Amino acid sequence: MSPTTVTVGTGPVSFADVVAVTRDGAAVTLSEEALVAIDRARAVVDELASAPTPAYGISTGFGALATRHIPTEMRAQLQKSLVRSHAAGSGPEVEREVTRGLMLLRLSTLATGHTGVRRETAQLLASFLTHGITPVVHEYGSLGCSGDLAPLSHCALALMGEGSVRDASGTLMPAAEALAAAGLTPVELVAKEGLALINGTDGMLGMLVMAIADLRMLLKTADISAAMSVEGQLGTDRVFAPELQAIRPHPGQALSAANLMALMADSGIVASHRTGDCNRVQDAYSLRCSPQVHGGARDTVEYAAVVAGRELASAVDNPVVIFSGGLGAESPAGAPGGGAPGRVESNGNFHGAPVAYVLDFLAIVAADVASISERRTDRFLDKTRSHGLNAFLADDPGVDSGHMIAQYTQAAVVSELKRLANPASVDSIPSSAMQEDHVSMGWSAARKLRRSVDGLTRVVAIEVLTAARALDMRAPLVSSPATAAVVRALREAGIQGPGPDRHLSPEIETAFQLVASGAVLAAAESVIGELA
Image (cartoon, rainbow, N blue to C red):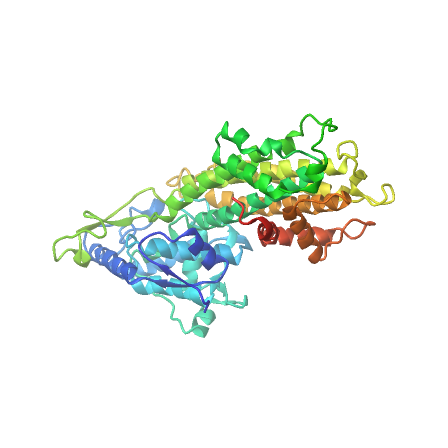
């Protein structure tokens, strides 16, 4: 069991909770308040299940088959059939953290007391997370409406002791074996439970939350790479002054500019050309406008975080159990579950459009921040624009190629990011005999955003790698304390300084790992404190 435990209650889990469970392997438990809410909603479902009047999802079929009333003796089979038939994913297995996000966020909705599952079903889902049992979920199958049906169905199938999972060590095995090894008993689904386990936006939401966490770190790191580039290309820091940002008051722009000022403070390189002899009028856009681009990206990420926060606070299911007086209202004794009279209502809250839109928006952001990073890198390599540096930063240009092909790699990634920036959410394809005739494609938007974040990380890493080489080539001029700390971190990780050509791919990969892990950010912050 992980030393960290996340408690899921009737309210939303936090961004930090999501990251702790998905990436750090935190254990999960349900609060007593959540268990009470779950029991209360279940009482409503049990009452409707015993009533002669059909209730969607409880005593009827699903989707286009909702008009068929299912006899009591066939309802357990109905739930099993639903899960088995909907676990129809195909393609490569998605990442462990994505599947853990699916399970956590589905559990969070179950805990609200609006879905009607039994407490033992919710507790088994929590136990999967605690024991590190991860169902195999596939790349393809979700249209983002009704939520992420196929991915969630593969998780529900494992709760039934069917399908394939990976245990905490990553070993692939039948779900029944993993359950037995952990001392857990498969669930026998009853009325409404199958539907409650599979009807939500949890996959796309989990990937959104993780992308926001990554982008918040990456945009600070992009400020670092930009500062290194401005400094290494003999640019000025005066365009980042706070009074210039104040007359265009975008909050992200001000934060990015403040970071650039802090990162370049006390730079001997910058000081060397603050003289009357300098004939430079102004720097290129990719240098001068870094705060405008990075800042706009920051503001977009924070808007996406607002949407994600709303979705984390949502109970996404169809149908849902609602109470006339609210979940915690005082109400007459004898009502289902001992609270306000409850009822089950169909709704459209499972549609992934709000999440899909911001997932696509962030792919645009990733592409543009990568684009400006690549342009800054390219300026180092062109002798006519690098202000005295060797062509391609080569040790012996002509004999050596320096970082020429590192920029090719950046350019290839940037072109891919532009393709990934094409929105998935503008597409729709009808399904379920035209019952589900407009879908969000939110899962697809989330999957491509993950590739976009990875690509942005690689592009920024190559800028850091190239800028560090250029700063070394400015010797005997000395870079700022913050950027010098970043260069030192690269060298301590095994990336050599300027010299004859050598196998470059391993150095790019090391730089990528340093950026992705937050080590580059930590190196700069160890000198100047936390960046904004």
